[in-house]
Image (cartoon, rainbow, N blue to C red; front, side):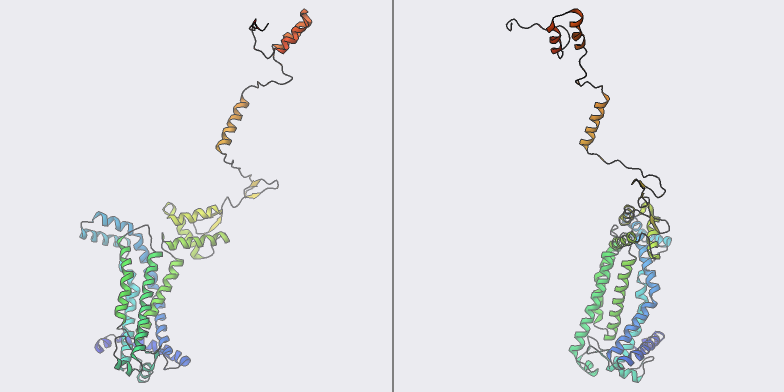
Length: 427
């Protein structure tokens, strides 16, 4: 082990120097021999490393998005060459090469942390065995061996015996309780991080083996942490728990502000963005403009959530532009003239759309129109039948009997032509 540590002294020495520098700061606040001073030094080492790895994390996100974009093409290749695994692998590699994607890019942050994790493990192991390493001299070694985190020494392990734990100034019960709690928290944080990725930030419209692989890792990683965690010193558990919490928080931020297209996280993000844009009637940040610009550029290739976002803006009278800005649409620029007539922004009267009528209203309107097109046949007091006028003039001209005109007028409502004689029985 000493030989391996000496071979990797190029990384163990810088790590020990960083820990010593942070310890000198926290030692002035909490005391040089306290667990807070040494524990916070390890936490600060994690934060420093993760800040330096942010560019790799961004590259990991881009690689993951590129892999998700290729899922439909990968599925076609798998279906086409399902009986020829070698040809399937060749076509997959060809697809990766043409698109410039790398499936291993998603593992870059973990691979980049491995040397620092290895170096910290050996630094803490040297403290447990009472050996100096790098910038940790005899005085710092003595101080680190006295440091306890909730009663557990910094260099103690879950598998250590009672004698070794006693030599570090602690009890076996305290060490195992503290290490067990930290292992459970470490595994739980890893499980939650992976589950959050699968349930919120994966395009659920595409079912591929890649999703099954991620789902399997959601259960495999926590088990691995639990198995290997019992052999880690308390200081290494502090390191790994801190980096898991950092990863979880970092991923929550990415899922909330830059979700995967087609995922549930995108639906929630676009709903928040729609409310914000509708309230302010514009996009206010570069990130919002970039999202809107990308959605507009997709055109007909938009997914369900993106189409809903555009349609909601349109209903609110807003129009998304190609540059990512949002302006008022025609429906929102309507004003009213002095006489109350709706007009557009240019001053032209707004065209009134007819209200939709029910079936009974349409039928009654059609019947009314048909009645107006026919000649009027109704009788009024001033309009008498034409056959009554000659009969009324006959008494004055030909000297007919006085009752004849009256009878003729009374019978004006009868039909024209000869009348049927009355029955003799009535006479």
